[in-house]
Image 1: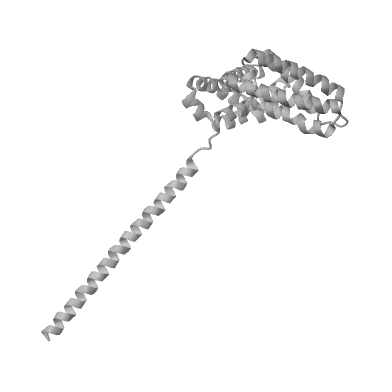
Image 2 (image 1 turned 90 degrees about the vertical axis):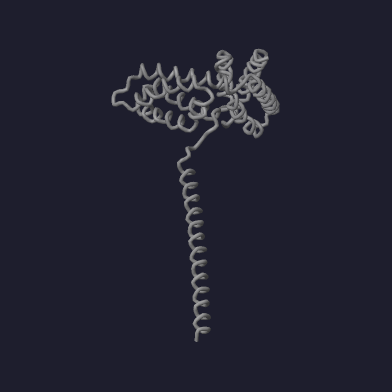
Length: 251
């Protein structure tokens, strides 16, 4: 009987040990699962909280565009456009301001100085257009100064070279009377110009205005039917001449 009792006791001890081991393993597994879940949750939360970042150069270009649109609204005395475009400045700025703050603190402070009152002023029930215009022009100047830092002379020179190649191709198409080619090449002028124009305005303002004066109507004229090839040819020649002048000044 004692032997039976001893065997039973040993069996019971083994069962309890196995049960304890299983419980410990289950607890460890639960803790591991909980830890992984928490890590995933924290990772997802961090991802959601992380703001969208935009390349500083692209951000400045977008903000300049918004400021120019606001300027058009102010100049036209169009309050609905002012109220529409004013808040867009803040929306654009938020996507890249951290990059400016860390790399260009002086320009960051200046942008904040002008942008905040512009946005507030554009939302006011009574809009002070004179003050708003002055602040917006100052903001545009600061953004151009920042663009000059972001678009160095070498990039301007590369852009001019590429644009000269394209204007040369367009000239050949105009001379040949190839309307399909003209319509294809015309919009490329604007696409190339956008990649470096913000670096031209602060350093070469006169040439910037001359380029805009020729390029914008040329791009528009390349898309109409019927094409005025004589006018297009004249605009293209003027654009080429101005590009050569910029090429010399940039060297």
